[in-house]
Image 1 (cartoon, rainbow, N blue to C red):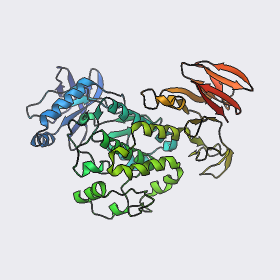
Image 2 (cartoon, rainbow, N blue to C red):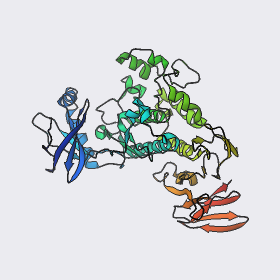
Image 3 (cartoon, helix red, strand yellow):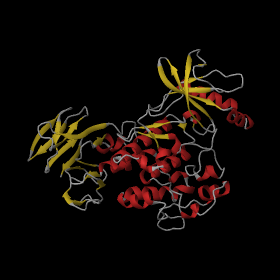
Image 4 (cartoon, one colour):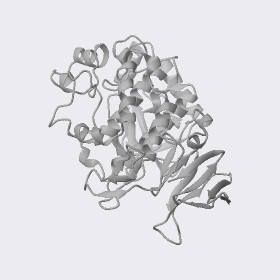
Length: 442
C-alpha cells in the first residue's frame, strides 16, 4: 500500500495517524513519518513482495500473529524501537505498524561503518565502551524475557555519539526463543550454523551476532572481512564458505590466511593495539572455540563483566586529553600513546584486577564490582557511585555515594561514615568498605 501526504492510516484499535512524508524504503517495506496523537512517529508498511514471500513459505499468518503479540506485550527496554500499534489490513493484503521515530541525534551504525568520517572526535574510547555496555544490557533484557532478536546487524543499531546511548530498531522479527524464525539474518553477522542452514535463529545465534556487533563497534571492521574473503567475488557460495563452512577470524594469531590488509583495514590496524589483552582474548575465544560450539560463546553477563572492566580502565592524558587504557595496574606512571608524554596515573579505587575504578570524571562504580553475587542479576549494572569534582576545588576528584548504603572510610586508623548522597574524597592511602567489600585508594 502506497500512501500520500495527508492520507489517514487506521489501526486495529480504530485510532488513526496522518501521513506526513516518506522517510525511506527497503526490501521489507516503506517507512513513513506520521502524526499520531499530536506527536510524530514512524510507520512501517510491508511491501506486497515481502508478504507474498512469507505466504509462499507458509509463514504469513504466524508472522502477523507474532507482530500482534509484540504490540500487545510492549517493549522490554526503552532502547528498542518497539511496535506500538498494528494497522488494519488493506485491500491489497498489506499492513504495517507504528513505532517511535529514531531521534535526530542518533547516528546509524551502518552509515558509520560505510563512512567513518561521520564519527565524532570523542567516539573513542569512553563513548564506544558505554554504547557497547548499553547494547549488551538491552539484548540481555530481551533474552531474560524468553525472546530472541533473530536478525541483529549493523542496520539495527543507532548510537548517540555524545553519551553512548543507543536505539535498536527492526524489532518486528523478535519472537519467543526457539519457537519460530521469519528471517535468517545478514551475512557477516550471522552465526555459522545459521549460514549453513543447520538451525534457525535463536538466542545462541543472537549471542554470536552480538559479539560481531561489539567487535565492529570497537574496531570499525567486521571480524571475518579479511584478505581471503576480500579476494573473492561476492556471491551466495562465497558467503556460505567464509561465514558458514570456514570462517577465519581476521585477528587469529595462528591463522593469518584471512588477516587484515594494509590500506583497507586502516581502522583495525590502528585501533587493535590500543585495547587491553583481556578484550582481545574474549574475541579470540568467541571466533575460534565459539564458531562451532555454541556453548563456548560468551554470555551477556560475561560481556558485561569484560566491558565494565574496560570502562574502568580508561584514563585521559592530562596534556593532550586523549583517552587510553591502562594495561598494567601496577604502573604508577603512564605514557600517553598519542603525545608520548608521561604522567602520574589517576587515583584508583582498587579491590583486585577485575574490580577497580580509576578516578576519571564520569566513571561509575557498578553493583557487581562490589557484590559478585549480583553479576548475573538484573541489578548488576546499578550505579553505586560516580566520580565527579569537588565543589570547593574542581581539581579534586570525589566518588559520590549514589547507593542506599553507608560506606565506611578508614584513614589513619579512624573510621568515618560516608552516607548516601555524600562524597568520598579520592585520596591515596585511605581504605573504604562498600557493602562489605574493602577497597584501597591508591
